[in-house]
View 1 (cartoon, rainbow, N blue to C red):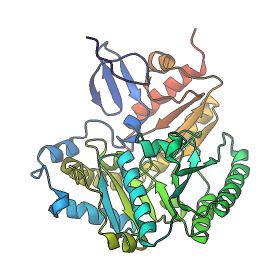
View 2 (cartoon, rainbow, N blue to C red):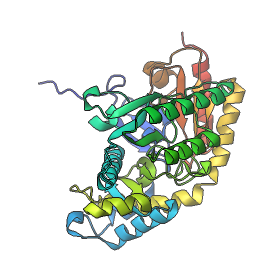
View 3 (cartoon, rainbow, N blue to C red):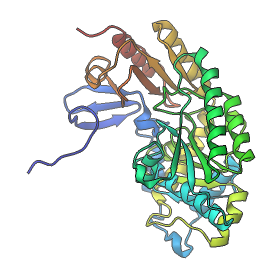
Length: 389
């Protein structure tokens, strides 16, 4: 019987090992992973310090729904809450699960206030995970009838940004006025699917003000851009706003173990505590993830200043190759004059990366990126600049 393995990419390629930013295959080829393993390996592969901590972790399991905890669990909860000025957090087994937990926090908040505000304002084309509700937030599973979609501010060239953001802010204002049953607005820190264009500080602060004006919770899905990717521990920090709820994951453990979290402020905590709210599952939390996160966090905090240097090197490569680009800190989207195929990416550029069927290559550099990384990145992008025969 043939076993089907579902993959959106090209035909099966067998990985033999990973090291640094490189993926090695059974055919002898190696490719530069230009996306940090889907933005999870911010410190690169084979981090000996994290591997050792995880292997020697003396506590493999705690039963969170009976009040069990551990010293490491307490330490990590306190660290995350202090870094983000949060009142509380709940663990999740993935970024998708963290979004589900955030939505559950939101629902309980409005239930305890006695208000029927069950609708969710979300942005078309956004990505919040693979659960049904997460997919619904981007327009799928319409019968769930909870998401009210607003077009994302989509732009490729800098001169388009201001107009697109103003248009979106007007749409959000209009949507909230016409739909008083909306209880929250959820947005990604940066939209991977919408040209990976960072929003302006003015846009962020305007959305924060609009949410406050309409008594709507602001939820930031920070799963992909937290823990170093945007040059800060929480990706939205540099914009000078504080959401009511946020989700984190991916590079939280440097990919060594699935772990996510949903964090909330004191306003939300005070309401959901009335119902003794919890988001319980078997791994509450995943203790390998806790051990990995403590080690990863310490290393990431030390390397955060590297994000500025990385951004400059990515910008220099774009200028040298005359490629339009968008990004900040460790991430950048490079535009080409045609749609790039998986085969081109793998065989011609010698890159490992996910594609979204457009003409851009999205790069997430690790905080540990060195000269070899940037030389290989430049060479691969150069090869893509010349269409292969």
